[in-house]
Length: 220
Image (cartoon, rainbow, N blue to C red):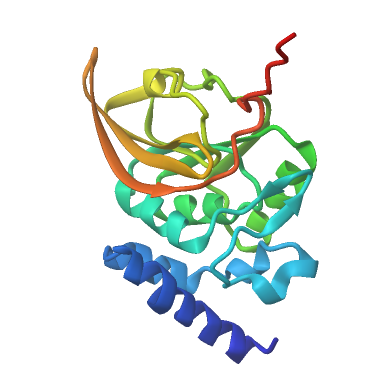
């Protein structure tokens, strides 16, 4: 696909998928129209970079659909001074979007191959306000005292407070909770040291964060 066609596909993604899904924040729309999603998609799926699907990444993982990425960024209302935490680096695309909005992004990925690929792609695009780590953050991540923004890019079958405990006062957490086919995207805001506001945003379906999957119970 030519550069001109990719630009048109990116524009169409924003106008036909993201905006109609109530993503109206001009900063988010402009960002998704300028950051080349195709650069982060695996080579054999580049023709689907701007499609309304979850693109496979390998190892049983996939990218979120663009409209969900847009709603997540809008809900988190990332500010230039924010320190953000991303759980699940994946392709590095959402990492790049967060890095364009935040002061610094800490991103944790359980699959080392993904971390290294994302690091290379982010460097190629001049994005250097990111710290990438390999690890299991399915129950939370404690390498920084508090974060202003936490984005969890896989769903949790059951909600736990491991992520919200790392929020700074006024910090926002985006997470999808539940089991297929219907899950709830939630925004949790820390409004006091021991007080949180929880808001249901929309229904969706998202692969479970690695390490949180429920396994079938065998009954004799």
